[in-house]
Figure 1 (cartoon, rainbow, N blue to C red):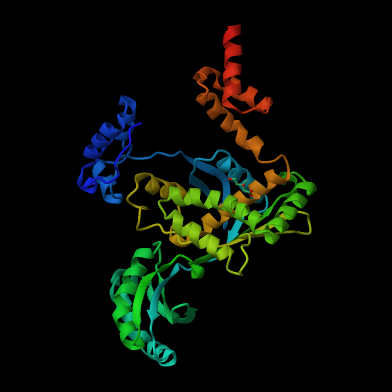
Figure 2 (figure 1 turned 120 degrees about the vertical axis):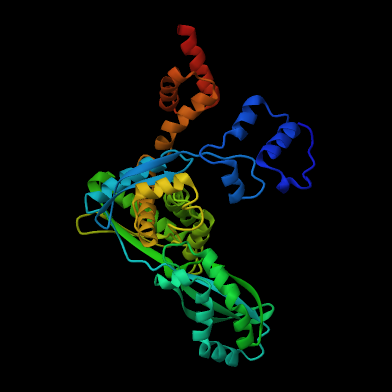
Length: 424
Ligand code: MEV
């Protein structure tokens, strides 16, 4: 392939079609590759162009449904967008194990976000704090002027917290503006408020303000969900014991805790994408919360009840919204929210936490019994067969042979195909 020069002046000014043409010339794209770029799915080029910059096309992923979920006595079909096989099947299974004991029970959660305002070079920290506290009402009023609708609906900025931190550039005062963002994810609204109140905060604190931005450690938006997973459905006492051992492993070892939490996020992020929410905000908040004690810990905890069943609980900050961002713009996100049938952001968070817990139990159950690869391989083997050029009508047969031989590899799929073809 010829070398390219990535300095393309005015790339952002081109239309999608012009960018596609440019790429076609640069990379000598084949007809089917050009078609791939042109296929925008359910988007129009105008829609795509208003979502991000420098758009060249649209990118598809599968969306599936996890079944069996009962959360706070209501049944849900969970839309999930993910590229990894087994995740949706595992969540559905796990939800079935909990369903026998009433399903998941998620606590109430307030949609409170934090916006941080960084004040540097404060000469008199004590007096700055006093001034800020005595002008709290005024600061909150300024903030709420930015979003009268939110305020009218019962949300808005309602408090400030002042923290003093030590840095290599000296002490700083950090003001947290606490905002009830109701059904939004909330980053936009709290950023706007923080910028608007900054001149006042600067005046009262007599310092210099730099950053004014949401904190993705949404500690006031933490969700708790718990469920009892049936011992027999899990596979018996030994499997439950295995899960408890896996939990102790994660508690003691950050290397394992990271993977443990990755399993939780398989579920939560699939739902986050499906509903058009910000996956990076959710990931960042979850992992920071996991590390808050100073050691990275699992986001779930487990115990065995008097009947030998597994009782699990998850605690995780979740800044998920049902309005704003992509939630209403993305047609599939809109449909996913309709299928999910949640009435507000709180309910979405309650569902997401339950999905995370279910996903975690499913992974630990597989790891503590037959291992994770068996489930993965069933679908993976079909992809491998496809990659090896196996025709559609022979995929199932070849995939089964790959799994049975425990050799899920392209070269072996080709060998099986040759043997089948020889016989016919
Ligand atoms: C794979 O995507 C997720 C797991 O690794 C989670 C875990 O180990 O708990 C199976």
